[in-house]
Length: 311
Image (cartoon, rainbow, N blue to C red; front, side):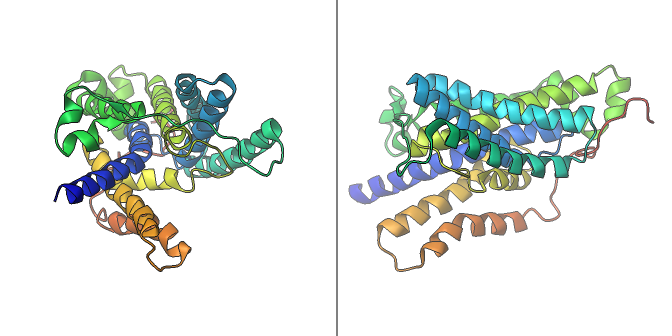
């Protein structure tokens, strides 16, 4: 019985680690969309964070600096999208998709420039689990929730902070007002442009952290297109979670369970084509997305450029 419980705890802990990058990125997307910024380019933001986090950690030897580098990489890509969406008033869907392709090409080129064409991938040490005193000793729960790496703990804090910010503060109300009716928000004295730029900044930070979680917290290396669609899955988590931080995490956890199940089935030698294992998380993402039909809470002005002089 103890062995079974330990196995379940290990599986749940793995699922949490798979869900963490989706949740971090999802929180950033939710913040941006509440301000009216549609960011299909989350894949590019995560990829920028994954690359910048790895390259910083590799050349400095510091995982802490790698995390900061990951956040910075996400910010750079996100602020390009901010400029195109807010200043240039470009179509936000097209600019987001363009950024995904741009970042894929840019990171591949820079990686080749830094390391050349080698037969093996350069690697770094992963973030190690940090046991929280007392809490980590709680049976089952302690092993699953409180023996994780530092980015998982950042996620816990972010979920709590975003939940309070969105629903319990004047700033959160102002953010929602900008996403629902920017003209009315502007008339009430809220700076719509500044609010949206700040939203893109926050999106960049958390998308970058989600990306560097993959390279620093899971794999320990970088390769072309290492994010592999997780930015799009983060968007699914936001839609299913209805922009609520806790529900976003739970939605990401459902998908994380599918990813963890994929690895467990492979380890147990289940006789299925490798493509079937790889597609499992995406199949689950599509299935859970079906449950969001008719339940969308997308802000009314999301994706619509704001023109102050136009009423």
